[in-house]
Length: 473
Image (cartoon, rainbow, N blue to C red):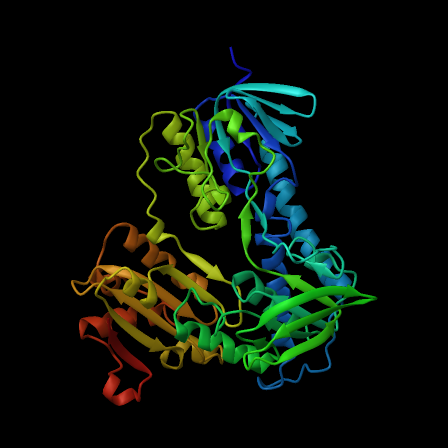
């Protein structure tokens, strides 16, 4: 008889959700935790960075002088800000610890797991056998081989929040979500000159150009300098700083010294050292676990969820996959996960909410679409917030079936869940139009976009000078 019914390797969003769901089914679980409980969902990841983003944003708003008050004399205390971040993370971790302590079916084992045969792992000197396994070890920062991370001056997202002081000059390598998020944070704190390096012609290349343009414009306003089409040659720690050498967009060689360099060139599945070959689990070319069907792997008794899979690296998706895996392995026949309906929030300036396809993805897939763009300057909630920049963009097939939504502006993340649900259910524009929206609310921009595509809008393109419009692809 095995020691447990299910062994969950990894205690991040996917692993925690899976272990607790298994106890709902009366299963004995070993939860192997090689790092902080909650994984990157809490520490050096989702919660810590978002807490820092909120605090930095609050400070930036408090320092404004164009809202009927003048807060320009305010100064942020980096140690105090860090303490608030640590408090938020500690509260989240304590909630998980309390929950696990209340579930006697879960054995919480601390340490790094490694397979020694298909049904046995070792954690230190302890051997654990299980009938089934879930691999949910998450991901780690991807660092180019030519870069040497010393964890003090040249850092990744695992160390950037832990510096003893705010850098006077910060270089960020990579203009994806992580790079742009930390550029926003440090620029908002007001004491760091931020420069962002990327090989692409524009930031956020995976999103439509109009989304990236709003963020890029805001970067200019808050003092973030973006080096586009930059080819980095060397990043070398030198004394108290870091020398960065690159070729700029015009082909000229440049060199500048920074106090700190953040390497934000993506994340990679943390699958090394698990002995997966001994368990019969195959990896994809990118190092992630190869999915055979849903959350199943090439080993019939092993499932995978979260960042170790080839799907999107999102905490909410990881949790959903963890639950799905448990229900699948115990014969509950869960419905397939609709990845096109997974919502995401980009914590930038302004905030971006995304679900489903954007225009460039629809074009790449050969899907005909109609898109309605309604600028925030037409939305009364945005007018009340004195934040008219940004827009809502809603995509639908020509028969009205919903394809995707992008919201750019304050509270964008609050405006995407309804459309995510509708995309997952295959609904049409009519479903949005029939929904009663609160007033004033950011979601009214989504409603107006749906009405624009249905020919029922309050604001007509001919009268609004381009602030609401339809494009077709």
